[in-house]
Image 1 (cartoon, rainbow, N blue to C red):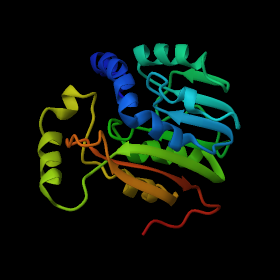
Image 2 (cartoon, rainbow, N blue to C red):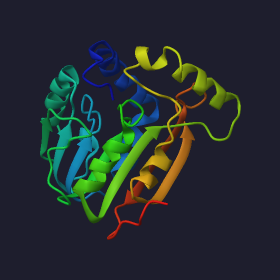
Image 3 (cartoon, rainbow, N blue to C red):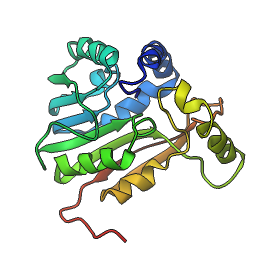
Image 4 (cartoon, helix red, strand yellow):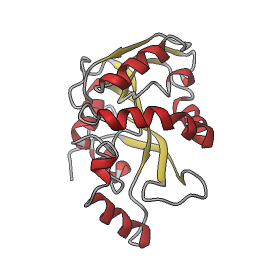
Amino acid sequence: MPTSTHPLFARVYARVRPAMDRQGAADHRRRLLAGLVGDVVEVGAGDGGNFTSYPSTVSSVLAVEPEPYLRARATEQARAAAVPIEVVDASGDRLPVPDESVDAAVLSLVLCSVRDPAAVLAEAFRIVRPGGSLRFYEHVVADGAGALRRVQRVVDATLWPRLLGGCHTGRDAAKSIVAAGFVVDEIHRFAFPPGRPSPASPHILGRATRPATRKPAG
């Protein structure tokens, strides 16, 4: 999601998000959140596009969004949700949540645009209780070293991040999730939107668990 330094793109995103949902993103959101229970933190909630997809088994959602325009839209969306949602002004690398206090963290199209994905994932690891869940839905680096990967390198080094809210097309979110200490339980890879290749078309969707003990890096 756009950060507070990209107010213009925040407005563009809020306009195009419903069209993305009609192309299939709404189904991805439902799959992302299916089966969640207990207390949840959503990092980079944007305009609240996920809110109506939270199942009734969720006790509460703390939705973190630093961008003022999107946060206001998310606050409106929260009123239509089936579960209690509080929208707060905070960033993913400094979550206003105690250690090991929530059942799940949700990252939805956010790791591409944050300044430090490792810091955001470290915070997610910190707040999720041992045995708790990380749900992720991200566009990511293309597999291999083919033409699409070369295009991603070029656009990430030029104007793409400036024009699209800090978005980077070539980040390896799955690798970063594992590096943060999570164990990936399930991951699906797909292109979105279907039949319209672009530097941002490779996507992943899945779930990971915070283990009881963290293995040493390396």
